[in-house]
Amino acid sequence: MVKTKRVLILGGTDQGWQLAAQAATIPELEVFFSLAGRTRQPMIPIIQTRIGGFGGMTGLRDYLQQEKIDFLINATHPFASRISQNAAIAAESLMMPYLRLLRPAWQKSEQDNWIEVESYEAAVSVLSPLAQRVFLSIGRQELAIFSTLPDHWFLMRMVEPPSPASCPQGKVILERGPFNLAQERSLLKTYKIEVIVSKNSGGNATYPKILAARELGIPVIMVQRPELERGETVAEIEEAMTWLKNKLEKD
Image 1 (cartoon, rainbow, N blue to C red):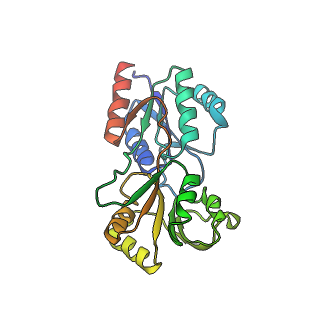
Image 2 (image 1 turned 45 degrees about the horizontal axis):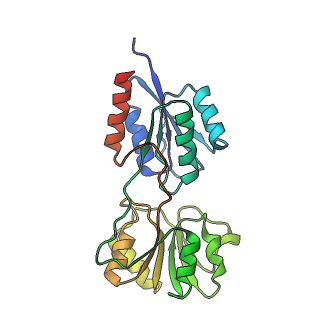
Image 3 (image 1 turned 60 degrees about the vertical axis):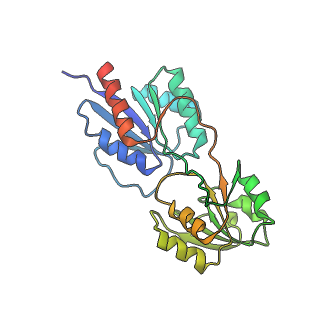
């Protein structure tokens, strides 16, 4: 009889739940799936899913031990630096096979007008003299940083509604991608957007805003990704599946 192994997949991206669904088809593998908060992810009934944080690196390490997890795959958002660091350290401390599934960052073309910055605070300092009407495409957690610019108007698009206290002045749109080029072109024109602030999330779902900005000659303040934590990294779901199957064969 083949011994069943367990993998914990830290989700937060489309790649995460797609990987979980594919991994669940491996007969000798039991899949555990974790999400940081209540998001509108597709339901995967055959997978054990938990919602909420672990309580730091120690809490995650304790969970891995309690649930007798054999492999850890981090498929969180490229900007989820804290959980990524905790995952890498916890796996290393337990000598557990660890993989980072990370979609590639967007690459600047010769036609793009990007201003690349290392933080949201740096984006604020660059933005101040640049333009007044801003498409703020960074999600909801970092909005308050831009409230220091009372003379600017912000178009803010996100999936979940933000706290009103954290919002700079402007308009909030609640939408989930993917978006297409025609939609993004229309959005930028309708709201007379002069500059975009975006984090370099990678992926296809929101890339059309970058294409639309390129087409319309609109500058993009691009917040760069945090430094990558240590550990093996792949970009595609198929590569993660191959990694998993190889680990199962070795065990």
